[in-house]
Amino acid sequence: MTRKFKYWKKRGVSEIPPIPFLGSFVECIFMKKSTGQLLKEFYDEAVGQPYVGFFVFDKPFLLIRDHKLVKNILVKDFDHFSDRYFTPDKKDRLGYANLFFVKNPVWKMLRLKMTPFFTPRKLKKMVDLIKECAKNLSDYLDLQNLEDKGKIIDVKELATKFTTDVIGSTAFGLDMNSFKDPNAEFRKHGVMMFDTDRSFELIVISFIPILCRLTGMTVLGKQTDAFLRKVFWEMIIQREKSGEIRNDLLDILIDLKRNHDENIKDFKFDGDDLLAQAAVFFAAAYETTATTISFTLYELALHPEIQNILREEIIQELAKSDGNITYEMIMSLSCLDMVLFEVMRIYPPIEYLQRVTTKTYKVPNSDLVIEKGTPIFISVRGLHYDPQYFPDPNKFDPERFNEENKRNRPSFVHLPFGEGPHGCIGIRMAFLEMKLALVKILSKFEVAPCEKTLIPMKLDPTAILTMPLGKVIYLNIRKINLEEL
Image (cartoon, rainbow, N blue to C red; front, side):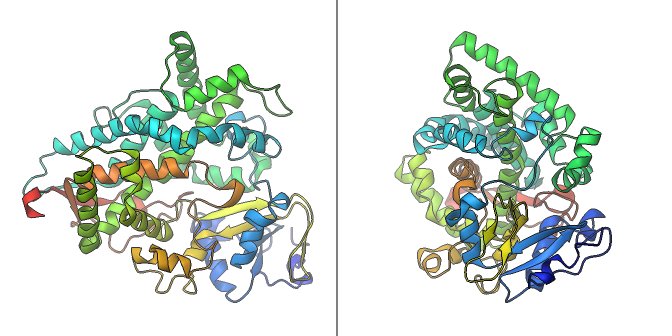
């Protein structure tokens, strides 16, 4: 368990001092810090160095710090790093066979076939589906008697109800309204997937995959697996019988099922392998989008001057379109773009990226040779808080993302959606969803701190994703009299 502990030193790479049997990951194993928080500390400890070695148990890992090397790994030399390191059990088809985890060459084929779902042309057709979910959100707030002094509301809960409805509609063809039925099955399983009770299980799946095979753990959880199978195949059968076209993910998957090429090794266009694509959409979009919406409302509540500027932009654009929310109108909100990019800098939904070397790699301008099979990690949080790229990194400042500042900053230091071929396929979808929700809220309501608001924000050290402590964000929401503006 300790024989590899000089692995990096022998290669001239500084390393985080490991502890026998546990390596450098002790605080994660005992749930004292999240993986993302610990990797940021490793990033900070290695200031001035292009990379630093660390250990998970006795296995050597490499954390990349240099933004030029990050670019090589994610884009330029992608063929050496085309697979993610985490590998669920092959028997867990919903976890293993989806676009996020599956290995090449299946990944490349799936990426090519799934991309049409996320093109601007397709998203324009989906706007009405998402608008209906946003209307449910707005109608819910209208019923809360938010005039005068307003009311204290958990905006994290508000956002997750909205994202549940969006996923149910766009991925599974279900017209839900979680605001009327907060105990809906979709909502329950969305909570279960990333519940802190599963945090240790998810760490085991990520870093000790052999235990998954021995214990039968699954990425989404066995109850959620069973629920998604039931809902998905019911909807597939119903859609095939009716011939209905909704321009949603289900349409894409039905088309793949009917018109695919021959099944290739380790993948077939049916059963759990097909369902896995809808399942990962549920897992990837549910929590990350909801937390970004709620963190945005939190920061705007703490910075009312920015909230007012943003509201003015929204109302002006709504006036230009006669109150009609279109895809073009949503995408034209440049101030909202800057706010969202800054929120995702401070609260990156995914705090780190991970790859594995698929063949031996010689690091440019260095004597270091990275062996095949070496796990490669990139601390997104570390880059986002590096004062070299983002001065005064703890300050909320959307102007960091105006055109001039973006031009003057190195590339590959802001990675909320990853980058390169493995970058988030749903980035346009995520922005459309988040912007629609925020337009609906901010055009009619004002958010402000209250006695239950956590200031400063604290993150849950046991969560797999970036999550507020206690999984709640309380704010006071008040309905605006437009004459006040």
